[in-house]
Image: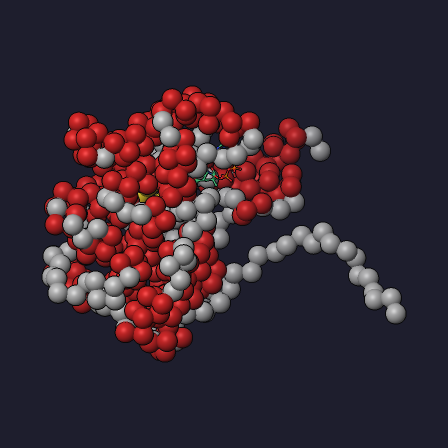
Length: 417
Ligand code: COA
């Protein structure tokens, strides 16, 4: 059959679907199947119905429960956004206060877990440490294998969200009691405290940090959320699935890109050296970290928020930063040049900076060691992972994830005796 004929038949087959976006989506799916016989990387394959977040990749929009992420970042607290994602709607004032109290009362880790974290080899990557520490927490929650109770799932999720920054802070400071003796007014303040206790006294930085966390809380069926759902679909407990999600997030093609972006900018060294570096990478078919996205075909709205609303609050004070932290200023200038150059080169391929391109610069300005960048992403994304787990538990007829492979190995053969 000719391509034209296939296209006509497909269009006829799909004409009863009212939603044009859905129609175009199915068209691409069936075409891929006809052309390749399978879906590499599950690209575009719908695996779940979810009401948590939505991306409009053509227009660069991200919504949590219907609210644009920029509006949430600008106007909401961590607690409000977290409540919204977990429960489906924004909280009443009393519910927000209740969640804040719950989170802040559960930041503490059992002694044995603290000691295990301190006992880890310091060279362990913080993301691997985080994944291991989350698994260790299971020992203190033996009921977690019973996964059917919605109320308990929600409580367990909040408890885990509360402990994420503490796990990272314990490893970063190597002090099991680093968070004792101080009262926190908000969970965002506590999160920032775990990464930089000095800046946690500054309301401006707390607000920026809170915005950065809200921007990262959920992002539809990304690789780590898919991992969480896949592991959860076997009815494994929350610690197992969240630990897997952390491992997925650590990869350079996913959340691990923020660390790689800043390391690349440091290696490049100056704005002048950008063109040579980019040309060289592209000539060698190496991906530029922090660029491109499977869903966005335009500027990632989270990247835009960092670039236009968070970073200017820091980098508008050019003279101050140049005097106090010239390396940081140099990184910023290198990133600006890099973005321009990459967009000239790759814009026609619909490749734009993603959130990881700009977030790393913010974390650098907050004084976070580069290897710890992706743990900040995880401190936020655990909200989405747990929300997806809860949604999955509630959906009727949830099936274990078990896709299909096309076998391309040997036919049956036998041991020759
Ligand atoms: N630098 C250079 N080229 C890139 C690129 C990048 N960062 N990202 C994608 N491309 C190119 C590919 O080389 C490919 O080109 P081709 O069609 O000429 O072969 C095309 O764009 C499609 O790339 P592909 O890897 O198939 O896209 P994807 O949808 O599978 O991957 C990402 C999406 C995010 C994994 C990918 O863009 C990437 O690896 N980016 C860098 C890592 C990163 O920043 N990750 C964080 C994501 S939030």
